[in-house]
Image 1: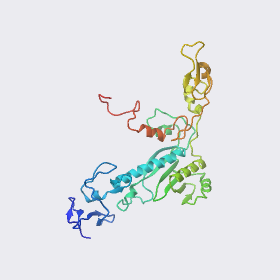
Image 2: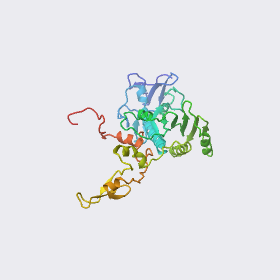
Image 3: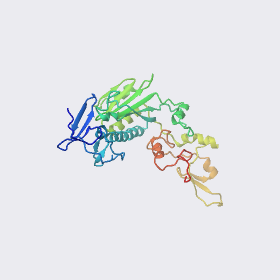
Image 4: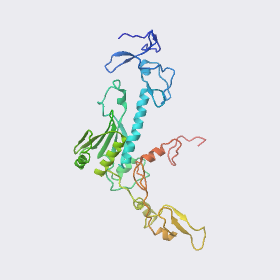
Length: 343
């Protein structure tokens, strides 16, 4: 096709209007052929992207990177929209793993498995939207947490965890979510046949063998349901811990034989006679300080809605990560940026 542009608007001459006032853009497709198209684009030279708040460069390739976003009733870069959708999906997909109480380390973006590796994004830009991969912690023999470690992964591995024996891959295809649970290296899934029986009634694309379980999930609700059932069948769920388990190390440190009470409320004023009595805020036990110290706290804290652990959050708790990454949150003892006269 010859160049129909008579009034170019870009220095490369591949974007502009024809004699009838129609906007044309010339772009190179995945076969390497220069093609001109009309009717699919808006003149966005004087607009800014609703997502990144930047405009469009004056080249045909840059002007072709556009999409109409119904959410804001405005124009955005298509690449920005794809990245935004990928981040929204990451939140939902990661939340599903957390809600199943499956302990894992990180959520790493990987190539979208719906497309072949190295797929040319000019054929379908949405291939840039990633799938996600994570390592599952399967060893709960030592559930202590080294909170002074600079790396959560190093701390877990130093404590004897084996976080690389099972992996989870999750991501959107076109209309379904692909869920894969795989054994890494020589690791097998000894419970794979039980999982096959568990999901036998489900009329979805699925496959099961000793190394890999794959399911298609129609929406986030099904993903949460399937992950929850896999966690139960495979015994992947992080066990809930009582306060006695969490405070065992603290009790040894301060010389207590019993599980301590985390918060005591004074029932009498200072210097009262007889000596002041105290009440545990959580379990309600009352007595003199020495008496209360000799009684174990029986309160069981509800599990964290993000990591499912109690009473202390897991080192990979998504809730804590989200809270600490919120703008304005200052971590005491952390590197909060360069020191200035104001701070």
